[in-house]
Length: 289
Image (spheres, one colour):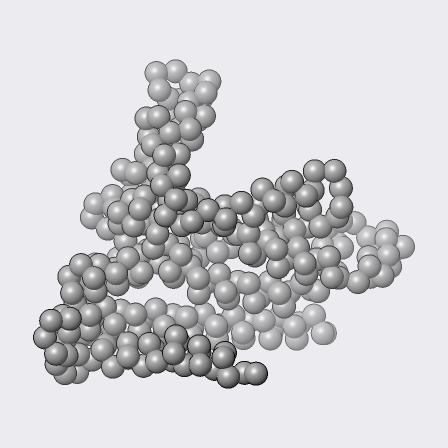
């Protein structure tokens, strides 16, 4: 019964990973046969300024977008776990962004971020004069300013927390009711209940989701950066590792160099899993005390 899963694991994960590892030490342009390059690709990555920018952008994106996405999903799960008027439509609304194909989702935000006619900037201009906001400032230039463009990619990612929301909603509804009854008898405040009951019980699920989102953030930024900002504004404000690998491999036909950059993504994934696992173990040990 495990055979179909094992076949998929070997064919879709382990074999491509082994090929990527082998290509990382070669020069390959899809025309000529691969030639052994040793550590030349790795050495070039160390001195490549574009790669350093892409790596920095990816790390900043993960450190900002992942906590925002998880916190928003947790807040919605705690708010909508009870059956009440309007809770079902609100749950459906939280799921809708993930029902849209990624390319269509990017094109939709491309329209929303239009600096002149986009709904977001039009809304920000309400109450202002001469095209300024009510605070007398120019609306964000989502597609032309580097800082605003990075914020736009993060904003797009925040609304794709549907899977995280569903898991946290199920986890919250599965918590035993008797512990909350005891807390009510002790006249515990809402903050105390959240800090001493809800959060410790949901900590394993939260830790798993944070690890998952950290790993997913390394490739989630590809479609928004490719469709909405095209890796800019110039020179490389929203060029992330995924986009760097895509362009290196499929536009510049440097498959060996792209494979070496992919190994960096794999190493980052391993580091994220190890760090989060250690933190999770310490967190459990703390609450056992």
